[in-house]
Length: 89
Image (cartoon, rainbow, N blue to C red):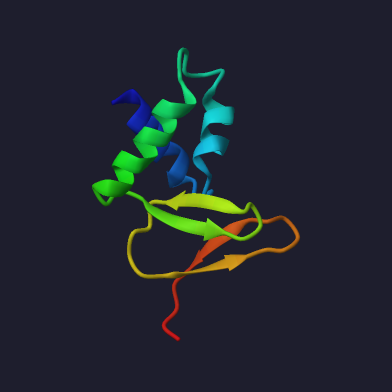
């Protein structure tokens, strides 16, 4: 349960991290954390609808997002940041 809270807290910042980003940033703060545990936690949170996956062209992988409703993303080609963009085209 603490790992799930840590995942959701990180995602509340709207950073759209990959599971590996999360693992690298939390390695020093969560003793005994494993990469498999992080990936499994992200998958479980996705399965229950708490997260959505976003293909990130700049990173070449999957990022995660707590905004589970329909929306678009803006991708900055300079800093590689993804930003949620709610607009009906």
